[in-house]
Amino acid sequence: MDTYVIIKQLHSGFRYIVFLLVLVAIIQSLLGWLSQKPYTETNRKINLFALISAHTQLLIGIVLLYFSPLVHFDSTTMKDNVTRYFSVEHWVGMVIAIVLITIGHSKSKKIILPESKHRTIAIFYIIAFLVIVGTIMAGHLPVLGSQS
Image 1 (cartoon, rainbow, N blue to C red):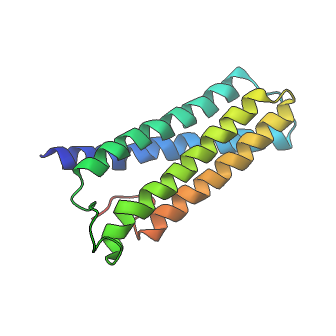
Image 2 (image 1 turned 120 degrees about the vertical axis):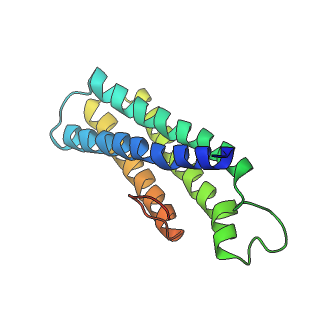
């Protein structure tokens, strides 16, 4: 097994951790916001772990960019749908999603009211999750399941 395959499988498998943690953060923030529950240490940790997992996935993706045979920059990059997707569109969409997660987490730390903390996380994480799913679907990749 070569380095590319190992990193690709790691990146592909780690997405489930990111999905799970971001979804749990979204659900617990929506419940906290709509039920006007206090913002607990558990809430903070779930939000933080979702942030950390997204950043870890980004780092794995950056390494994958270096090794991937699907990524190259030349005069044909933008003409080929697959090359364009992996060389440009995928990582740009994911960086946007991770920036949204980071902003949401950072803003929530500065807010005092628990309801506002939950609302901020819910809004930013939901938008980020939609960007992630939309970006994956734009490349005709399975959101859940393995790529053939």
